[in-house]
Amino acid sequence: MYRETRIPRLRASLWVSVPDKVHSLAEAADPDRGNTAAGLASGPTVAPAAAPSLIVPDGCMDLIVIDSQILIAGADSTARMFHGSAAPTVGLRFDSGVLAQLLTTSAGELADRVTPLEAVIGGRNARVRNVGEGGAAAVMGSARVLLDTAGGLMDRAALDLRPMALARALDVRSNSPAQTVTEAAAEFAYSPRQLRRLSAEWFGYGPKHLAKILRWQAARDLIDAGRSRTAAAAEVGYADAAHLRRDERSLIG
Image (tube, rainbow, N blue to C red; front, side, top):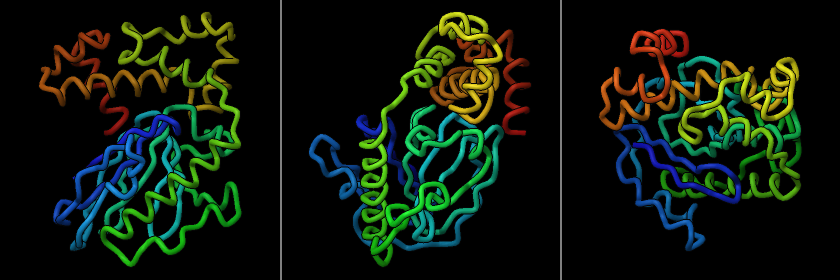
């Protein structure tokens, strides 16, 4: 089971993933009531052995709590297998271009890696303590720690809005049709070389790869909503379904 709640102030979504055989995940609370963390889970859970899961690239970076440690999941350029805990996993998925700014580091240094937050920012705020013995208490505690940690980072940050604007320009879901990399470079008054350098710093890879990921994600959303592969491919700008399959193979194998 998977649930997520949008946290607009953080430009992120708080998510909880529970192995299929773990029972009793509560309804997510209404974030407008200020009870997001408390509402994500309640009641006892039973933790079976967790099966590996496939994590597909989405152009985003996450903070995740695993085994009482906050980890940075860098942007993935291709799919990878995630061997998580059998217990519920809690994370914050940030919009493209946000988390690297909060960490004052380059997304390229964190791409395709899982890095302890403490190794990047140091200090006690990167550590998880007293989040509960397990089950609902651990989920609520982890959520609170993530929200508090991210809130502290956000309060100290002066966000550069250009990365988010570029990601929107390249994403067919927010800008239909999506701009080409050449068009985006012209709109932002960058040379192709500047755009590649900034994109690697902001997202972890170049603008062409980000655009490829975002278009494939848009097609995937349509297919999940019931569209045929042919219809989804046409709607997001692929030449045909075979073109979609080639991109898909290159991203997830």
